[in-house]
Image 1 (tube, one colour):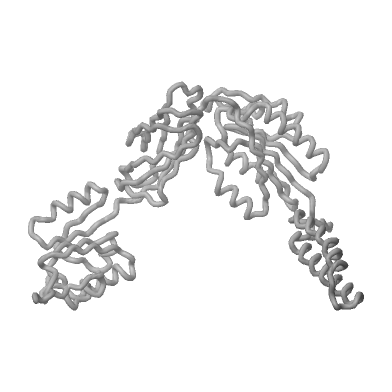
Image 2 (tube, helix red, strand yellow):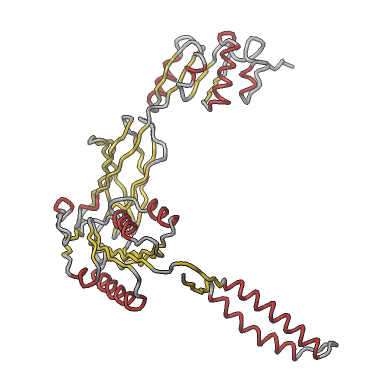
Length: 411
């Protein structure tokens, strides 16, 4: 069992310089107090101020096993400057010599990764840009054509020693081309693993790439939605973004992007439900590397939203039916309200100028329960059949809707 004393906020200790000022003010202040009382009062004030300063400084004594396990994850992908890699290896040597952690490893990574025990061993690793399709199973070769940060951090977590204070030092420019890092980092932090990022200098390459692709949390088949494609461009340029779903092109749009990172909003519809593979491709002129111009993700697509549609005007249902269908809804036209259990098969009910006497009291109760308890949607379109004594005035549906169906008398 060991103990370590640390001060979390060392800047607060500068306030100790106020203590001599406090004594100087005391000795130069005119007062009726006796010298003994004044000295006692000043001492009390000094102790109080010192207690406040120590509280701000946050001194902490930590007990327990303080053996440290550290993993150095070094990004050697194409976007990282070569001299940064050399500086990182020298820094690792200095830290190892100064602190001598109980356990340490170095992960050299790009598109793939390898684990070594020392910087000397790291320098013997072959780093090459053969392209993603030429990845070798030989652990002495690290592919520069991509950056899989998620896999590197995942392996770092697995390599950390048990019953140690766990630390990961990440050397990278953050330009990930594969994997998703955010959830993994949050999981590591919740497990008590601290990750220290060392931001890499970017290599001076006029390269554009797709940084990220995001979709709404909930996606339905044929429902219009906006996807967000984040791209980096080394200069102002025109780019073309195409998105394919399960091998079929669904959209192709052109954009003018500025230098740096750009968030492009792209409106799309996914035609089928289920797990749909999406392929996002960026085309830009004179781009030296094409491998990072493509992103592949998988989207879970729910079935179309189902609408139950009742129309009170004869032969008028086709107009709204067509409009809803074109908007991506699955529409069922009916002339009556089904039972409550069947109502729950629909996402919303549309009542358009339906006569009140065609909906029974029990059906109205089912609709009210469907909306208030189940959370279903209700769209009510009024008309000549809905107002007055023969309409929905004083009905169960009137209580449910933000409308008053009582006809106003002419004055």
